Image (tube, rainbow, N blue to C red; front, side, top):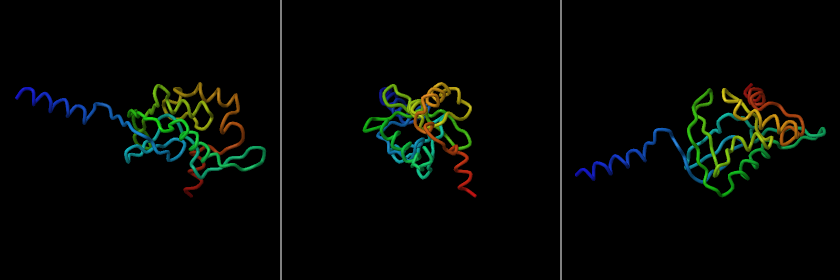
Length: 155
């Protein structure tokens, strides 16, 4: 009987971890949002252009939002993604997601496809500074800040 109670306790702990963790193959929604096992996951500490958002390079319009989503899809590939609950904010719960030991938020900001935002902005500030200096991703041209673009579209 003691063994059965211990087994039930272990199963309960595995089913309800102290910090929510989601693991699986990811489907990319946009440059800062994934879906794993039917759950929408917003990456913590970053903001990327929306899939429909466009930017400009040398006076020409280009689909920077779609390219940011492709960059995140490249990072996740067919790999297992592990997402750990980080906390909430105005947009709900956010997660730090990794593929192996690679932090997807750091990779997206470092490649110039997302901006460091929020209270933990310092977490990716170095990556953003380096991407801007190297004119990577969004930084190679002109763009509207993702939150400003969304605000203008909401009107």
